[in-house]
Image (cartoon, rainbow, N blue to C red; front, side, top):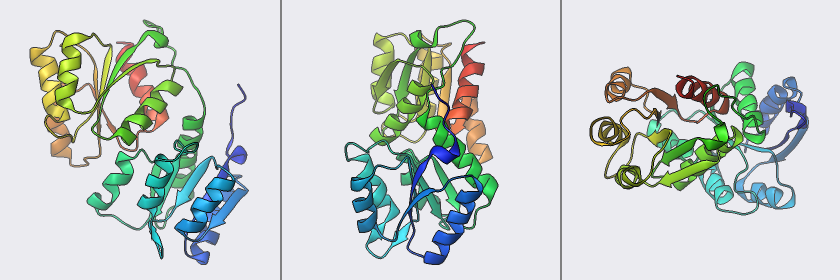
Length: 265
């Protein structure tokens, strides 16, 4: 397979400010990206996607006719472009405003202003998401790895499954929350659990405690996906028996390294 480069990417840039579009385009050109279509509002963005499906949508948050979140939801629920990577560029800092973007599986959230290093990392994550890069393990065939993905957001599960599939994982089972995961774990054996932290009924910490204390799979590796940044909170999660914690967005290269370390132990 031919390896993708930034120059291969087709970008749809959705930003109401002409000045901001020029700034972002300048950063993109430094990454050798020149295939850039511009849109200034949600309506023109949707029309553009219908005419040509981009490799990546880079969007602001606020528009005269809607929000970037509305655009993201439109993309995620529309075939044939529901899995197009989405990058948010925003000066918004409030956690509750950004959480829905993280739950929907954005490839990156860049602050305004951002620098070339931030953009370069996000572009690399996009390339990883678009390219298959199988994980080579010493003890297992990655195709045989049985993974349980637990998240109450269908969009988040889809994003996690896509990342795992690109790494060569084929045997993936889904659970909508910790309670459903408990039932599945009592019925089937797994090699890895990837779970969200914030879930109704039974959260990721409680699920991990069940696995460690009350299941027949007490030694199974658990990868926790969390958007929590509080160090004390993360320490409490680790004490529950989590093997590794991955931040949202769920970045392919970081996940690849974490899985290599977990599954080669």
